[in-house]
Length: 177
Length: 61
Image (cartoon, rainbow over all chains, first blue to last red; front, side, top):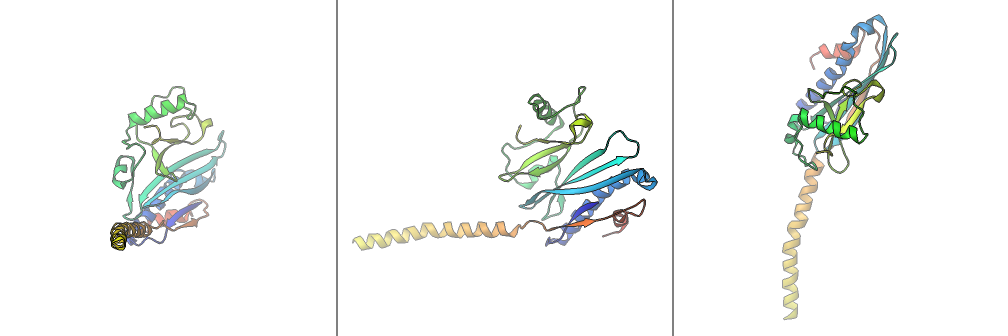
């Protein structure tokens, strides 16, 4: 497994908070399958990707991939974590306004709005939804990206909104508002 | 007379240009202050309970 740790932050407290949170998030993947790991009935690989790292924002995705013995197919789960690396504060979907970034359209993310976005994108063939999709009930994990601005991408793991075959689906939430 | 006008024009131009240059410089400084975070990759290999990240999790940083 590999996971990131930040090094050069002038705010030492922020560095500790971020590094601790990354460890906790990554360790959760292991803890959730601790029994299988102990039994030797699963293989797990954890990796990460830096999605955005400038203007005080650090956005990361942590990916867990593996295969349980006897399972029909492999498993894959992605988590998104976002920080203000000047303060160490974690950025959540409901607190995006605090980062002071200008979006194409000011986002106000609610479960209802995201469900509407998912259905709209499904119609356009950009997202595959479960045939009996009723809608998400909690705000999804997300990451931030974009060269000329900041886009928010919702992360939907297999079975959350779509079938296993659709894999991990990342959906732009900013472009559809 | 012409020379006076030219000098006055240049002075006026200087008055407008100076704050613009200063403003641009200030913006550059602010932008440079927020450097990207340096990220190192920690690689762990584990088997069963012998997982370094779990030990690290219980260790108070």
